[in-house]
Length: 337
Image 1 (cartoon, helix red, strand yellow):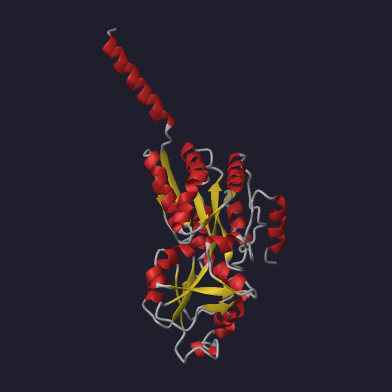
Image 2 (image 1 turned 180 degrees about the vertical axis):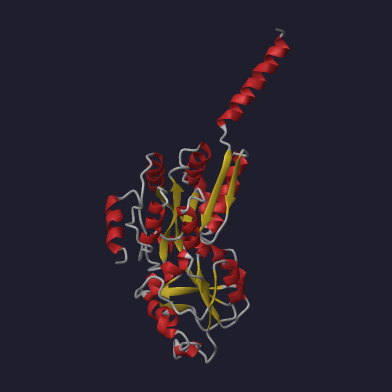
């Protein structure tokens, strides 16, 4: 065999070997609107390095996503709250085992229209008076919230009941998960909520921080006072636990039956890598510490099944260092009863 042919064959074999190392296949993901922008960014970045993997990312709300996930219709569930006991039972009935992974923190954000020049901060009690079920058909004017506010209509916008954000907000603010007035403009698509607030000078609403960050020129962020002064959501106020009680973990649930596929393994490792935290920050969320990311990667690699949060849907005031067993126990003690 001549030298040039040998070199060509060696190069071809090397190329084949290199290509064989790259994962191939399709990954299906559904769930939280809050997590969607982050997972979409992760999927786009992952595909650049792994063109043989097709990552299909959709959103139907955390609750809607869990229905698909527990029916075995998707590989990964994006969740803005932990799995509920009823959802865990649904997965059990369908023989769907899962691995629960935390991967970032969100600061759930209260926003108004930029033309609103009279409100910069609301107390948790004021938010409760607005959103509790007894406010339906009764609290419909800004002046009813605070005497210094003008006599103007109060028009509310927010996520629907399939959204984990709805579950978390009602638990943290109203005091009972899924307990809320229903006479407001609601949608599982946060872009609809954002557009509604941006078009209405009398509007008030809430959703994940990423949707505020992406539309800062069209929205005004409101600080929240839980008894220690007015605090706005930010990476710092989430990290130091002062943005209370609207800080929360963002989660991934991996179908155990899919976890051994090379494409899934590669994607989860990419998602939890310290290098990928740039995507978390860019979208507007707060990365887990490097040690916590390593602990979550180990949890995935060891195939630890079930929820570490007891099957409850929402956690109050959760800022969890997943590498710290004492923090994990503390969180379990803070879970809603």
